[in-house]
Image 1 (cartoon, one colour):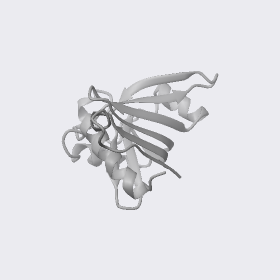
Image 2: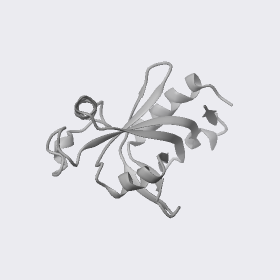
Image 3: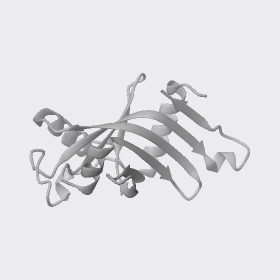
Length: 159
């Protein structure tokens, strides 16, 4: 098992290169549902935190009220894969929403974008705008493009 310090930077590199990931939630009846989302990840050398700009009024939000854990998978055509199983928490206060808005608006290419392009968001205080914090409990990074050539290393970390 790898350490977080080994796994997190590799995870962020893959995630920010691929940008879009499949995110799974579970509804109140226990049925899984997936969607494609666009998180930003921050690694400070000790803690990895992800952020998703999304609506607290969505079906996803209803699922998270039932089960707050999510699973995210990034994949590209070279078979590079990064997976994170995470606990989640909404940042719905004014300070958290403003910080989240700025995180995306000022974010690095290609993961940064102007949140106001979403018509129902308009501004950080829009009712349909929220920030979902991701706290990983398990990470897995598989550089398939390297492993297929006998190089690279599968990294797995769990809290």
